[in-house]
Image (cartoon, rainbow, N blue to C red):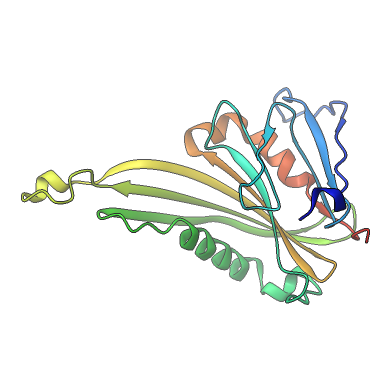
Length: 207
C-alpha cells in the first residue's frame, strides 16, 4: 500500500470513563481512508513499517505486545458479510489455524498447544456485523533435542500468548484486526486491549 494513496489521521481522544475499567493509558485514532478502516491504539505504542501487515503498532516496552491489520486482496475477494466465513465458531477455527500456520517452526523439539477461548458476534454502532475471536497459544521447546537420554530432552515453555481478532467486511474485502499480548501481561492490560478491539471499524474506502 502506497503511503501517498493513504490518509492517516492521528488525533488525541478525550478519556471516557468506564465504571468497570482501570484508568486509561490514553489513545489515538488511526484512520486509513484508502483501504477503509479505523481503530484506536495506545498513544505510547509506535508504528513499525515493513512488518508485513497493512499496518503494525508495537508496545515499545513489551515487544511481544502488538496490533496489526490484515486485508484480503481486493482483486480476488468478494465478501458480502463476515457471515461468509460461517458461524463465529467456524471463523474462530479458521483464525486459529492461520495463526498456527504462521507460527509453524522447523526447529526440532518444538510443540505448540492452542485453545479457542471465545468466539462471538456483535453489531457495532455503525450497524455492521463483526466477529470477535480469542485464542491462546503456548510454545514449548527442547533446548537439547539431540541428547541421548529422554530426560535430557524435556520441553520447556518458551512463550505463552493471548490473541484477539476482530473480523469485519466492507468494500468486498475481509478485514482482521489482530492483537497479541503475553498471557502474563494480558490480565493487567485487558481493559485497554479490549477497548482497542471494540474500536475497530470498517468503512467505505475513499478512491
